[in-house]
Image (cartoon, rainbow, N blue to C red):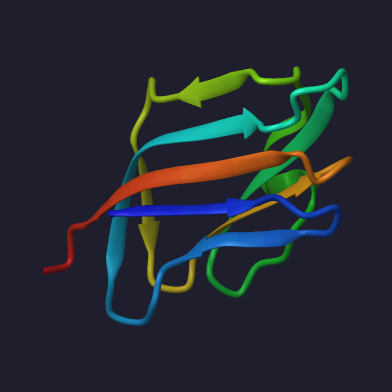
Length: 106
C-alpha cells in the first residue's frame, strides 16, 4: 500500500496504524516539488502509540531536500504496531512524503 501527502509546516500525521493492525514500512520518499530555488527542511518522527512528537522519537532533523530532488530511505524496514504513527514537518510545505508499506496483520 502507498500513502502520500504534502508535509505541512506543522506536525503532519503521514501514516497511523489502526487498531488491530501492524504495518511493515519498506521505503519512504521525500520529494521537493518546488521547481524554483527553494530548499526545504524536514523533520520526521516515529511516534509510538500513546506517545508524542519530540526529540526522543525523531529520526530525521532538518533534512535539506533541494528543489526537484527526492531523498529515499529504504535500508531498514520499520515495524509499526496499532496506534503507532509517522509524523513529519517541513519548513516551507514544498515536500511530499510517500510511504510504501504492507499490512502484515492480515
